[in-house]
Image 1: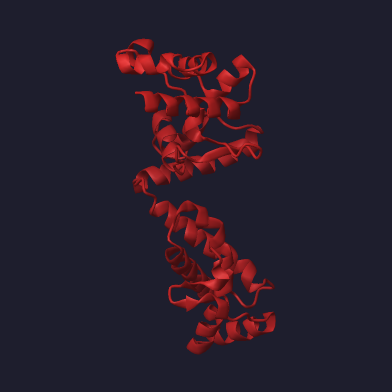
Image 2: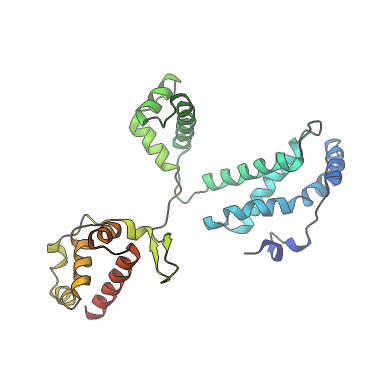
Length: 264
């Protein structure tokens, strides 16, 4: 999406103002003295800054209008709290305010709802991890993080800390591409990296029709299907074992499955 050519929240982004540093300084002083018109002009003159920041968050599938509005909240907070007496550019102060507001929105509006207590524990744990890492010159163990938190009167155990840290990790789609073969155009997805330990020969061969479909595969296809689904190996493990690339394993596997579907 090209944000300089679209409308967001009814705002034509192609017509947004661009203020000079001198104009910003003048408007900031007026806004601080209670001039509401100067405040509004300052906000309008920095909307491009909001647009440039929200572009880095567009791959999360969030509505662009929502991100723009949240970014504007951060901009308004920056306008209202900026200290004109400090020798700092307004954009230097505003950027982290806008980013922080967007990140807070994404955290609180995640599809997987995480309770406030769990989020708080996770952020305490992250803070403890950072401090311990600097002190130890290595990543601390969960047990060490837990001990640190308990000493800080944050009651928890290793299981709770582990669960809290996992809860704030953004979920990844099984169909998220992890590798693209430029030559063949094949893509490897997260799903292709996961082994299946629940399947067995007995489960697969219960169906006579499926058994017959497998018999029609080539020797290489049978071998890959057997290792992939009967033995629960990943595509990378199969590639190393038979001496071909993971992309080739993926291509053979998908072709074999398509043929089996036609014959099933």
